[in-house]
Picture 1 (cartoon, helix red, strand yellow):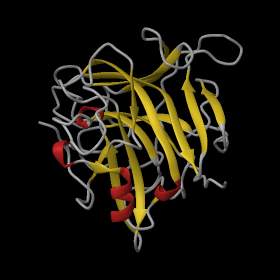
Picture 2 (spheres, rainbow, N blue to C red; picture 1 turned 180 degrees about the vertical axis):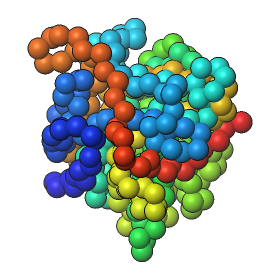
Picture 3 (cartoon, rainbow, N blue to C red; picture 1 turned 135 degrees about the horizontal axis):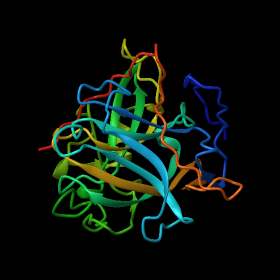
Amino acid sequence: MKIGLFGFALGMSAMFAMPASAGVVTVTPSSMGDWAFTNADGNSLVGNNPTGNGSMVNGPATPPAGTGSANLATGNGTTGGDGAEILASSGYAGVALSSITALSYSTFATSNNTQQMPYLRLEVSYGNGLFDQIFFEPPYQTPTSGNPALPDQGASVLNSWQTWDALAGGWWDNAGLCGSPGSGVVSFSNCTAALQNAVIVNDRGVPDALIGVGGIQFTVGFASDTDVFNGNVDNFTIGVDSESTTYDFEAVDATGAPEPFSIALFGAGLSGLAFSRRRRK
C-alpha cells in the first residue's frame, strides 16, 4: 500500500513521517507525525481565531486508548464559536475513498450548542479536478436524527466517551452531490459513487489555499459566534485496502514527561487557507 504525503511549511523545522501501514501509532506533543492543530475564524481565515485552542491532554475520564486524547475548543460565549479548532492529518493525500475499508473514532464532549460533537471532515478531489468536502457528524446517526436506513449508533451525549463507526454511518457533502445534514445523510459508499474517482487531498486548490492543513480533519465550531465548543477525540482508526492504523492521542511523550501542546500551523507571512464555512442553527 502506498499513501501519498503532501508536505507543508509550518514555520519551524519538523519532519513528517508516512503513516504506518498497520498497527497502533501513538501521537504525542513531541511526536506529532503528520498531525497538527490549527484554527480558523468565522470568515474561514486560518490561524485567526483567538479563542481556538488545540492540545494533547490527559483524560478526560478513561479514554478508549491509553490515558490521553486530543482536545479541541473554541468560543468564549461572546465570540469565536463561528470559527473552528481543527486537528488534521496530511498523511493520506492521494488515497481513494473507494479504498477505505475502516473509519472510526471516539469522542468526549463537555460543551457544545446542544448538537455538535467533534466531527470528521475529508477534503477530496473528484472528477476533472473538482473539489468537495464530506462530513460525518455523530448527532446524525440515529433513525430519528439521521437516515433510518443506516445503522443506529445511538444519540450523542455530553461527558461520556462514545465510539462512532464512520464507515457505516451517515455522511453529507458541501457540493450537494451526496446527502445533506440531518435526515438527508447518506452512506459512505453513496458518496464514493457520487464523487467518482474521489481521492483525499490536503489542498483543495482555491486561489488563497496556499498551504494545505491536511485532508483528514477533526473539527469543532463553524456555528454561531456565541457558541462554546469543547470536545476530545481519540482512538481514530483508518483502514486502506484492509490495512488498518489506529492513532492513539496522548499528552505524554516517549520519555514519560508531560508536555502541554498547543500549536498554530502558520507563522508570520503565510496566508490562510479558506475553509468552506459551515453554519448551524
